[in-house]
Image (cartoon, rainbow, N blue to C red; front, side, top):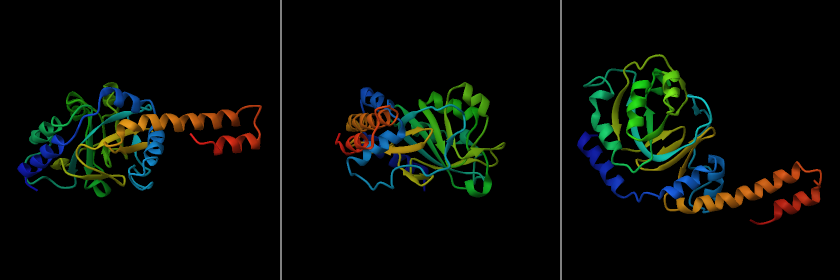
Length: 245
């Protein structure tokens, strides 16, 4: 795919995004990905086995951060040298394309050679660049490195594992659809990541998701509190479970 066509597609996709107000984004952040996934089910906009990453993804920079943002997609290879150029610095058009998205942003890397190469997708230098470009963090199906340095700059990296070398890591495409741990991601998708993984939030229902999540969480809290109460009984449990929100 030619670079001009790729960037044109990214420009077109970015132009269709109606940025959510900060209040909506802040409301989403009050819940974990599990609660958000439960709330999305309420709208019946997709199958329940779609819209989230499969097991294996973890935040390798430590802690339990939550990152929310519009997906800046990129595909890379690492097993063999590129046809031209050497590394990310040779592809500043990728960085320019990130700027087309509303903020906040999340950098999404699909390493097409991850199963065989095992090379690091990004390290401390590129993490600093991405953070300066207002990315809240990054997600990859591959590996990352420079964990202490990236942790200090508070830039969460979600990956499968860590690796010493970047080998022949280079950008082959950007702004196009990718797939991360079974989750298809398009340029501009709204993603939410935490210790459980990543969930994609449909933009057309995103503003209504927090209210539904709040109702679901309130019912769950009532059941949990009852189970931990000396007043617990099976009768009360059945009543709590069967009560509608």
